[in-house]
Amino acid sequence: MNKRSNRVYWLLFIMLLILGLSIIIDCIRKDKKDIEVINNEVTTNDESSTEPSSEATTETTTRERTTVDPELVKEFAPNYYNGLVFIGDSIIDGFARYASTKEAPQWLNNIIFLTKVSWRINTALEDSNGPMYKGQAQNICTSLSQIKPERVFLDIGINDMNGLGSPGYSVEKLVNSYVELIKGIKNASPESKIYIVSVTPGTEAMQSGNFSNEKIKEFNDAIKSKASELNFTFLDLASEFDYNLDSQYSSDNKVHHNNKSYSEVWVPFLEKIAVENL
View 1 (cartoon, rainbow, N blue to C red):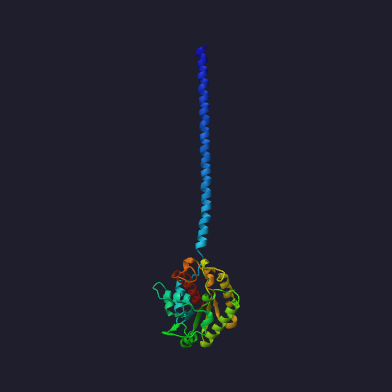
View 2: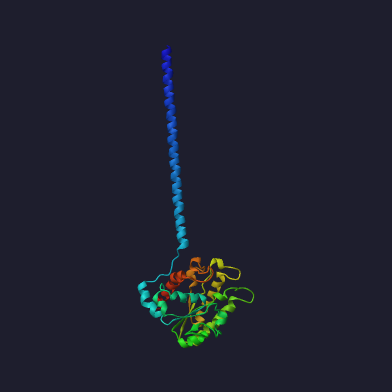
């Protein structure tokens, strides 16, 4: 009787042990599956969050640029810019220096640059000590009457932007000064076609109470409205920068441009003008 009872007890013990082990194994398997599910969810979320982030980076660092068929550029740009006069301040002076580098397209060598650092709209017309031409600093109208170019590109005004909107210094007054400058150029070279290049914006770091890209845009829009009246073509270069000069395109993180800006933005913009007009 005792032996039979012991066998029963042992049998019950073994069955309980097997049942307990089965429960433990099932729990382990369940936990493992739960961990796999969680890991899959994390991986999926990471992939979905990473993908938009990558797209956002592309959107902020890459913008649609003006592009032109290289064969058309080769055909039209040299003729279009042959003997053209480009008048301006330090920003155009920087463009002239870029034009003399080996990296610049060959057609830029056909342009005559008349530039003066720190030049202003308010003083340009009466400046007898204006941009250099053939070794002589002289009034811009004197130089144009000597050159008699087919086309004149005028890009000036960044030095006049600081302080716009302050008492006694308005966009309207500056526009009136620009109108007088344009009329003076037309009188000096009546056969020339006049192209006004918009004032380009400054960087975010340059914005202040006395200088803003908003005021630059207001000024450009006001000049553009005079195009029909004064018979000139307005070229909206500022929009190519989305009215904010990215620091990667600035030599001083303020308003001046570097060679990257001239090669990646200015050159394609001007090439497109040549192709569209010829």
